[in-house]
Image (tube, rainbow, N blue to C red):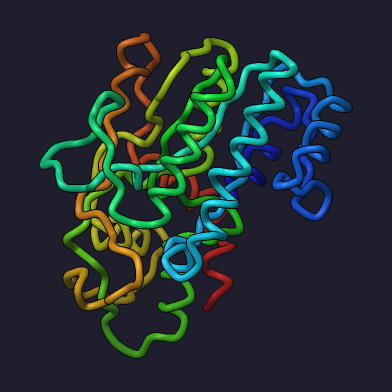
Length: 277
C-alpha cells in the first residue's frame, strides 16, 4: 500500500526503480545486490515488510525473515554501495503503556512478535547501514488498502445494525499521502537516525471510523467497545501515539492533522470505499 502510494506521489518528480516482490526476492542477498547495483540508486527507500500482525504470532519465522533478514540484506547492500537508506518502521516497537505520545528517544519494548521483528529490522539497519534514517509510522491507510477504512467499508456494506468499533486504543491515523510528503522532505533534508512521521492529532479507532463515515455521507451506526471484544492472537497497544519530535526540532512544518488528511483521502478516493455498497 505504501509502495503504491510512493510510486503515485513521486512518479513525476524522481526516476523510480520499484520492483514488485515477484520481480525481486529481498531475502536473496545476491539478487538484492545485483538489482541494486543495476539500478545505481542515489537513495534507497525500504518500504517492503511483513505486516500481518496476527500471522506473525502464528509464524514468527516468516515475520523475522520478512522484516529483520530482509532489512539486513537491504542495509548491507546500501553499505557496500555507500547509498543512504530510508527504512520504514512502526509504533509496534513500543510497549504501548505510556500515557503520552512516544517520541524518538523513548525506550522500546514490543509485546508482539510483529513488533519484535520490526525492532530487529531497525537494529539490522543501524548495524549495517551507516547512512540511514528509520521512519516510524502508525495506523496507515491509503488507496487500495488493506486498512481499517477498507475493512470498515466492507463491514458497513454488509451490516444490518450498529457495528462495534474499538474505543480504548489511541493512535495517529495517517494517510500514505502524508508519509510520502514527509519522506519527500527527508530526501531533500536528510535526518540521520530515527524519525516519527504520523499525522498530527489523535483518535481512537471508533473516533476515526465515525469521522470517516461522516465524510463518506454514510448513515451507518457504530457502537464503541473495548479491545477485549475482539480477541486477537497479537496484543494491540493501547497507546500507539507517536510524537514527531525530531521533525519539529529540525524545523519541518507540522504534518497535516488526521482529520484534514482523511478529508483529502475521501475527496480523492471516496468512490473506492463507496463501491463496497
